[in-house]
Image (cartoon, rainbow, N blue to C red; front, side, top):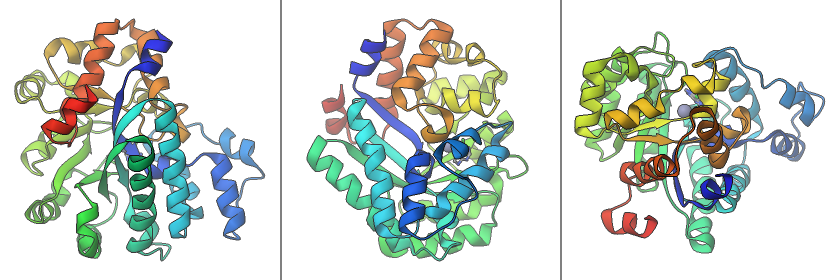
Length: 324
Ligand code: ES4
Ligand code: ZN
């Protein structure tokens, strides 16, 4: 089974590039940028990767990314993730970045975008890995801050396929961003949002009906809402589920609780992704493998999950054919 998973061509649709920052890269970038960290070494930092919930993770996540300052830093970060994709037979990626978290440190939008893009372009040329870039708004910040970010992105519009919504879900409902998403849609962005990770199924309804997103990130809370399950299945609205993330952030207490088999049985377009692999203990193959072992997925189930990824991705039909 591990070989079957490793050899399978895969698509990754839920990945925060800042969440691929391994402790080794944190320390090397800190050194290059003359930044002093509050951790003695890589293993001390890695030892801090124990989380109780989403917020306890986000605190460390925002801390770690402070070493990212230059265009080269964003290139190195993205290139290191794409090298991993190549090693794991991940053929197409749709990656998030969090501009507001870097603008705060006076890093220019241009610097983030050009650094990430240069790595994406090189991976396409060198390895045939295709990609989309998704600008994600931080939902714990204000609507005004999201609007500022959308405006700052305008000169780089052609680098982006869509916008997303991430960070602390509790008490930050999708409806807070209804006007920003409407404006983004008018600028031709495709729309996705994190919903139903720690938040209720109601936030998934809002993401669909108020924000008009076409895909839900996480969405595991849908399992408790039969009418929502029926809607997701009927409209083939994809869920980008992240098994190791849900386990590490205690959305589930055991991997066997993850309702992937139920989603598949119900006809929901569920996909497997790695979210923040440097923090959650594994990249794409590890996510498939941990899930397979916990719920005893068959090869046919795994193939279905991988094909759902192709269906859910933003390539055109001809490009999708190449992946299958
Ligand atoms: C995230 Cl796991 C998760 N949930 C919400 N926002 C995020 N940003 C980065 N990882
Ligand atoms: Zn996420």
